[in-house]
Amino acid sequence: MKKKDTVTLIDNSTGKELELPILRPTEGIATIDVRALYRELGYFTYDPGFLSTASCRSAITYLDGANGILRYRGYPIEQLAEQSTFLEVCYLLYYGDLPDSKQLTTFKNDICHHTMLHEALKQFFIGFRRDAHPMGIMVGVVGALSSFFHDHEDVYDPKQRQKAAHRLIAKMPTIAAWSYRYAHGLPFMYPRNDLDYAGNFLHMMFALPTEEYTPPPLFVKALDLIMILHADHEQNASTSTVRLTGSSEANPFAAVSAGIASLWGPAHGGANEAVITMLLDIVNSDNDVQYYIDRAKDKNDRFRLMGFGHRIYKSYDPRAIIIRKTCHDILEQLEPGNRYQELFDTAMEIETIALQDDYFKSRNLYPNVDYYSGIILLAMGIPLNMFTVIFALSRTIGWISHWNEMMQDPESRIGRPRQLYSGEKPRNYVKLDSR
Ligand code: ACO
Image (tube, rainbow, N blue to C red; front, side):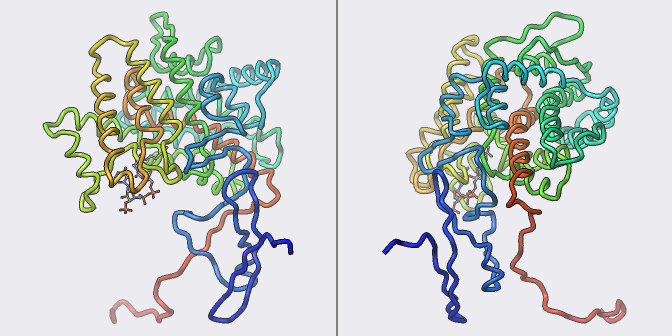
């Protein structure tokens, strides 16, 4: 007899049974379709943090945490990191396939011609305090973009969606760099269309109007690689935030602004900043590495090894392997005895000790993408509070590709989770003088 591709749920309290279909993915973990559950049995499912919940179908990124596999549109991250460029990866993620040379030229041209910001947007930067965290500026300015364009309001029109996507990819480096320039009292540098994506960002970050500036090729290449590795990571917290925000048909600039807010937290994109803060603390302290490892294991101490652990990866994060090697290669090309080398050596020492420690081994805690990326950014001269901004800049393509996919999905509807109510039962209002 042919086996049925279903699971049967038996409600022992009523004796009712419900057969639920198993949805088979092209690769990876199968999913039980529970949509009939509430209608048929009157139950919700309970899954805080979405540990066992697939919130959507997606054809963009494949992630196998047990085996350390990451693929964009089927292409292994290692091959893309080695052979592709960030803009090519942007095309791949958004459109689904690698571009031919004509498509790539047209795409690059489209991005190049959207890099400038409306002059009035400068006033938004100037309105922030000088010591504002650039992520706060990003949240505000990206949200404000929606008030400058009115040809993106039909979120069901693919052409309008594409235009919004191109604008976001193109303008994000300008917004990111200007948030830094403003905080440092430096003049805003306009984008240069003759430079490639990463080079143009470094130009807007570091050039002065008084001098010629050529972005260092070593750093352009490294930044392009970091952006490729951060471009997408399926349904993480910020991408899910973009999807949830966009599910109400909110405009894409508002949805991406929400994604930036979600990314900011130290448990997500803020970790790259937190890793360097931790490494600097260790390097500048009289305590040895083992002291910090012990603190990370102590349940009464909130200290965690930043850059370690991941909800999905239960083996080495494949992006961390690539970044560690790049970090090593870059440091070799800098002046001997540079201060980044000390941070790298300390990071390696922590990794070696942690990976032999039962606490980390038994919980499958390995370095994640953020563990080594910060050292490279620091070596480029990028200040700590810009690290998560660079993550946001890189992840924009992932966010907007997921939003675009969701807007075409006939199964998608407004995201509206349910809850397990744990509050008071009905009670009567008590007048103030009787309380
Ligand atoms: N240091 C010490 N212990 C850790 C760490 C860590 N970095 N990460 C997890 N653990 C422990 C937890 O205390 C928990 O132990 P327990 O089972 O004894 O209670 C166990 O490992 C499982 O951890 P959870 O927090 O339940 O795992 P979750 O999937 O919810 O969290 C997260 C994943 C947030 C990434 C976590 O590992 C963490 O906080 N890491 C440090 C911050 C970080 O690097 N974030 C970047 C993530 S990658 C990214 O967003 C790009």
